[in-house]
Image (tube, rainbow, N blue to C red; front, side):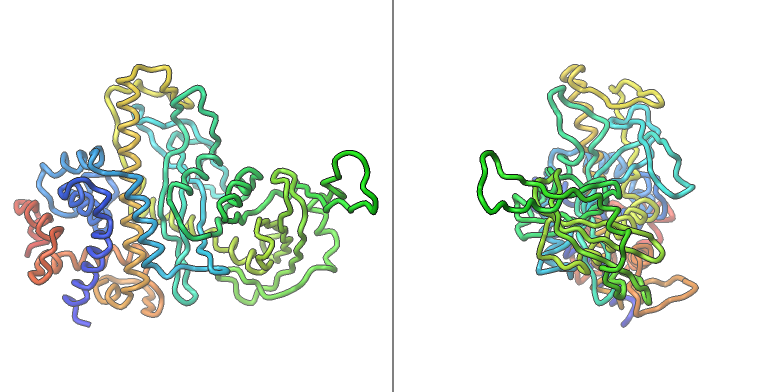
Length: 472
């Protein structure tokens, strides 16, 4: 494949995806600034906020303020953009499906932020086995949802939404927990097909499992080793007075591992594990927090130790449950790319009206402030979410090209890796380099005549090296 042809193939793929999101914007110009920001995410050379978009695309100085205006614009309907992006991902990506259902993955991410006038920044505790993460940070706490897609044996987590769910309290009557907010976030995506949601032990909640069951969906999660469950109560031969017993014999779940004889040994279905044998056992028990029968899978892993998995779907096979939870880490791989390659959470917006926060402070209570103050804080929070969602779309575009335009990506890569395997899907970093190298071909393509191409070319600053490189 010719280099210029592969370059045009990549950028037409990008524009084809972005055009589908046009209905989320009330004005064409707002949409074009959004598309420019996505291109900036995909091609910038550093993660220094909005200024990196201006440098990466060689834009004029005035474009910095225009980009800031876009992230604060009322011309963007953020909820509509999120729904359109979710529907687009379900339609065009090769999704991983179990029993005909797509697989969603949910997790939290804590982003360090030092700004004293950034709404939502609070003291956060991190639980991690990594020595590189401090136990306490000041930052933003987000909850994110991704959907699994892949070709052959390669699986990735396509990000679809992330929101800041801690740090700001709008009302003293607002009692929603993080689990409630996650459920509302998933419902807001307006996914019309039944799905599985995979999450870690933090989300092993009876109310969350029950809420998803009411909408026809199922939760797959890990439970803590000190959890207990109950056998179903035996039915008496003759009905007695009073309410029938609901719970039978109590079972401390970790005691199931005391006797491994009923366990079945098989090859591990976990993604990436080859020549690994695991032992598992499945039991359907009543879990009191959910007040219903749940399927528990007890896994004895030679390296990871004993793990207890749980799902609300009693028809799901134990091996499928193990496989599903084994793919949960893919969202964490996506977080790593968001932080270090794409910069989805690298915003630096602040507001002058805000009272500075002190180190170690907690939530900010807006109902104690004036209406003007509340409006300014919520406007800035919306700008954070607009930046994050734009970065999520950019991340999804990179993964779309990796999954569907693999040959064109490697042809336009033009750099060096110690080991290049063309049969392996390129990473987000490789796709970013391919787009960066092929951007001049897109800007010079007279046959495409896309509005985005003209919009960027008209704003390139030819007095700077970046602009000259792009139009040379």
